[in-house]
Image 1: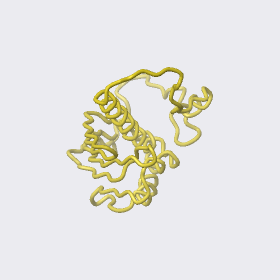
Image 2: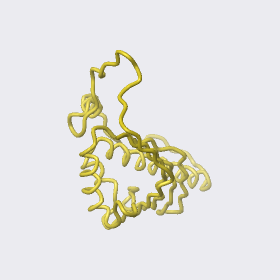
Image 3: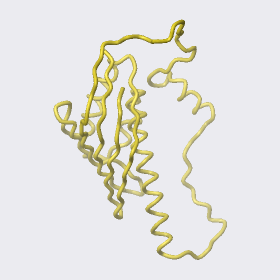
Image 4: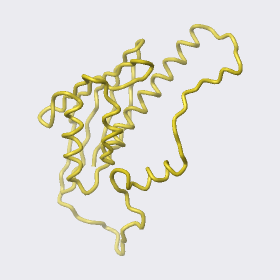
Amino acid sequence: MQALIGGRYLDRHERCNDEWRLSHRTYVLDWNINRPGTGTALSGFHVPYVRGLSGAEDPGLRLLDSWRIAESRTPDQSKSMEISGSLVSRVEGALAKGEIHELIMAQARATDRADEALLRSLWHPGATVDMGAFFTGAADAYCGVLLDAVGSFVRVAHTVANEWVQVAGDSAVAESYVIAI
């Protein structure tokens, strides 16, 4: 069965110890389409040589590891200049929105790759999730239920778009549209 599902993530985010994380997510199902699997419409189609996998065996994770890519948040203290408080506030807001965008993308990536460590790292302790009949409760338990569910799929892919983020100090809310296949 092929499933195409469209909905929205309604998120609350909080910054603690200078890190943004999810504190609550509500999923709103807007539509879904289920059809029998049909294979490919392309004659002579062959499976790609490099195939996506879950966990540590995924080619993307091996590539990033080979490049030794790691985040660095060390500010450049070599130069200084005076800037207005208004500009500082706007820059802080833009940076917060960027970090929240990264959280939303990381959650989709962690789900698609069944990356347990990444998925669990995105939530504050005590965070909650409301996915209706699929799951409602603590984010920690949700991670286990979600990983069990995606572990039974041959493939899963999330596309997240139309993000709207509103930041107020160390709290934020976000709405993002999601399509899951």
